[in-house]
Image 1 (cartoon, rainbow, N blue to C red):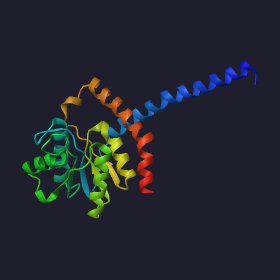
Image 2 (image 1 turned 135 degrees about the vertical axis):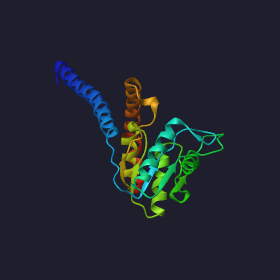
Image 3 (image 1 turned 60 degrees about the vertical axis):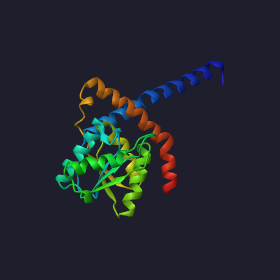
Image 4 (image 1 turned 180 degrees about the vertical axis):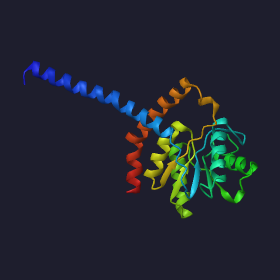
Length: 209
């Protein structure tokens, strides 16, 4: 191969890599946006509410928005059980799961219908714990109630963990209403989704396999 041919070949490879590097995030962001607009509230065994920040037992606005939406779905009969997820941060007296459960009970959901799963320091950890809790109860299907941009990643994790999973995004969080903030969350979630698919998903599938 002559130096000129080698240079042309190298430039073609670099061009292909550049196209891939630009296309994959764009396609991923588009998928996140599309799923964020899908409200798939079909009947299921359980409503899963991934955790978010809580302050001394009081749900943050993000977590409260998810809990409020889960309560609506429960009252509509989408599922007979709500499962709140999430552990606690160092120094916290309450877990995200227990704070969520207490909130739902205070707002009229029967205590017998709310299960707290206080495990998982991140989304994948919480979804793993949810999958274990579901299997122990003979549950196979779930509607995941989380923020719109978070829906694709949690749904993907749920399905990877063996659930028949769908999403019904919570839209009560006012912090996400502006276009600029919405774009910021989608961009952040794009990175998190690609990190899961490339680096963490293979380990999940290896364990299950």
